[in-house]
Amino acid sequence: MGTIIDLHIHTMVGSMDSDISPKHLAESAKATGLTGVGLIEHMSPWPPDEVEHFRRESGLFVFTTREWSTDMGHIVVLGLDREVRGIASARDLHRACQEKGGYMIICHPFRYFPGPANQLFGGRRDAQELPPKALAEHPLFHLVDAIEVLNGGCVERENALAQEVARLLGKPGVAGSDAHMPVEVGRYATLFEKELESEEDMLAELRAGRFQAARRVQPGVFEPPEQSVLS
Image 1: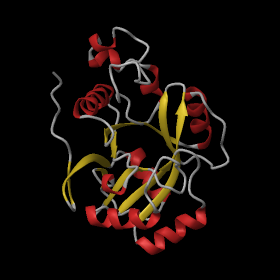
Image 2: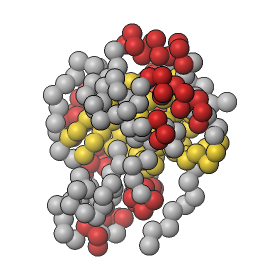
Image 3: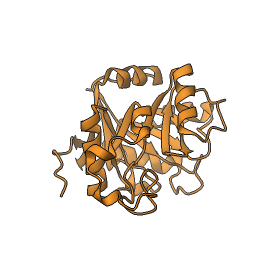
Image 4: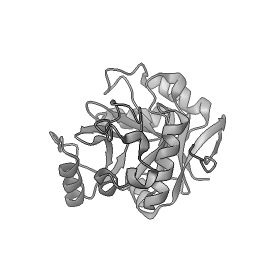
């Protein structure tokens, strides 16, 4: 059967800009056909007891971590100790992951591209002229393990660029809604071949590459995106 996880959801528990309560998250996840959710918070992950309570109440596969704001953009890290704090450099975060077995995912790398608000290329006036092959040379893409290729806060062209860069680099792509409101939950999801039972299971499947990014076409039905054509 596998596991269908929206890998990027923010909630009221750990993100001040979210309107998603645990109750509304459970309802929205089930309504859209998800079988798992990633509680990705801006400030701090959920306390373990709250995660366990939510897991029992909802029946969903659940994990929690944080979205790190670094000098090279936003990065979700899985498998890193909760005690690790105060890292602002992507390279330092990468070093910590190598030491502790963490898994790094760059979030929405081309949001607002090619404008000045884009976190990777906003300082380059020639950004719009750069082909995907040149974009793929950004050092951050070589630090992370996976690229978020479908993000609910990005427009189609921004997601298409992320997909093309992932293809050029041979990096796996994940998907998440980046939801801050209940209606956004489950727009995108990552499909795992295995029915996951623990975060350790998920990390093993991520490292093995047994997953794919997908978009919801109707409740309970998720499909990988068609090959994007960049104009």
